[in-house]
Image 1: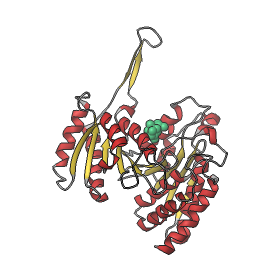
Image 2: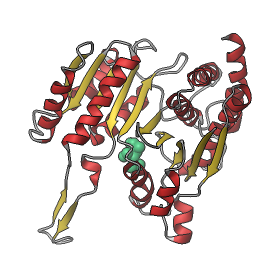
Image 3: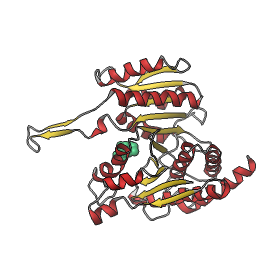
Image 4: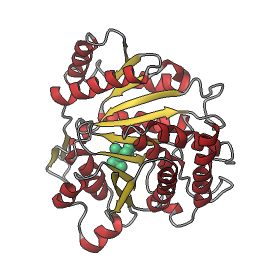
Amino acid sequence: MYRIAVIPGDGTGTEVVREGLKALKKIRDLFEIDFEFKEYDFGGERYLRTGETITDEDIEELRGFNAIYLGAVGHPGVKPGILEKGILLKLRFALDQYINLRPIKLYPNVPTPLAGKGPDDIDFVVVRENTEGLYCGSGGFLKKGTPDEVAIQEMVNTRKGVERCIRYAFEYTRRRNHEKKLTLCAKTNVLTYAHDLWDRTFREISLEYTDIKADYAHVDATTMWMVKNPEWFDVVVTTNMFGDIITDLGAMIQGGMGVAAGGNINPEGVSMFEPIGGSAPKYEGKNQINPIAAILAAQMMLEFLEEHEASLALENAVILTLKRLKSLSAGKMGFTTAQVGDLVADAIADSINKG
Ligand code: IPM
Ligand code: MN
């Protein structure tokens, strides 16, 4: 029995999480896997009502779950930064989810903006450090609002934080067993302190993984190769901010925000799975948003729970469903959000029968 905390969050988060749960309930019926879901109302509405984002007591309660399933955070009525810091980043930091795992995988029949590239070319995983770097929230203003204003935003890199991320990436590359190539994406030519630490740590750890080819690319070059030669990448390990940026580019080449999912992983604790697109307030309540990314987040959660068969069945169901969608964009799928969820749920049974 898995206890799953469900945080639909803001905007279209509720709609896409509903479809992810539909898939998980189908999995429950077809496999010998039991889930208990508990829903939480963290998000913009609750914040506007109570002034609370996530309290320390909430965090303590969340520690008791096997995983967290999150929709989206971001509300047009709340100043940018409050919910992101107060909910999403607070969860990542407080639960020490030090890895943000983001597969960039182009599924068959999904259009990519990259001319001449197909599913064989676009299939890699970004391991993004998720608790440090420019996201640590350390800094301040001096003489704010004056012509002499100084704004400092500190980038924190700890040996421990860097090492555990790189070590995870090597282990992941080995387990993935594709090209067995791990690329460090950084900016050692400019960030000569912070990324010297990354580079040194990467080289040291690489000596323990002689079966893995350790490669390096500057972040600017990485964006270039992601467009020109995405087939060069197998696993990419990078810092929090760079990982944020290159995975939005990754989402675009894999078919858009409608399909991009990620996992915030604490290998020793509670992990959290989410579609990486935002709350898309423009589409809220319209039954038009694409739920595939949220469904793939649920699939990553199954994989993380080591329910490999169920995870494979759900992934196959998504592949079957993707063939039937006219487009992956909101409002253009040829189906409503709920209908796409139904297609996936039905395809799970089909994919088991075939498999
Ligand atoms: C993401 C998002 C978040 C981030 C924001 C909403 C804080 O862009 O998950 O990539 O920057 O990590
Ligand atoms: Mn982002």
